[in-house]
Image 1 (cartoon, one colour):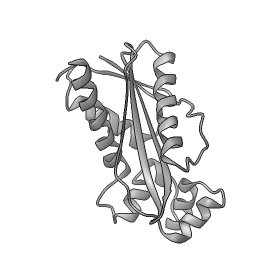
Image 2 (spheres, rainbow, N blue to C red; image 1 turned 60 degrees about the vertical axis):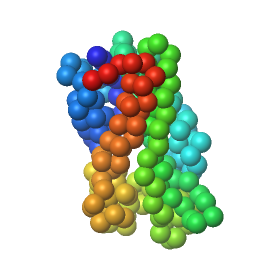
Image 3 (cartoon, rainbow, N blue to C red; image 1 turned 45 degrees about the vertical axis):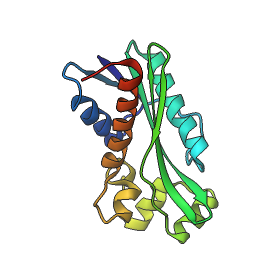
Length: 174
């Protein structure tokens, strides 16, 4: 099975590879940085879903793969504050489109204000932690869960949701 990954972000790539390798033996991966065609900082579930779908469709079109996967992190505002959100999309060569979302936690108010002012979460997290490349490592979820859940683990859960739905819909089993 050929899996096309619509990103080169190490946390997302590892999540996808580990999830598929847990279910399938003969898997080949190709990763290509694809465009989400949404803002750099998605500010709603809808925009984050669209970004994931656009990445999955784009990477599938760019390769001769059986499956394209797109993962997108964003934020979503609610009556209870601004929350991290993360969505994934699986698109296969038969035209099936599957989406799934994952964990949510509230962001601190000061980070929410900065996001609403137009800043992006990745650079904000680098500034907040005084480190670089947080989005390629533990992510904001890792920072705000004291390392108990990392970005890779969060996206791994989303990919498991995608695989399970896809298996059920297409009868493509382990």
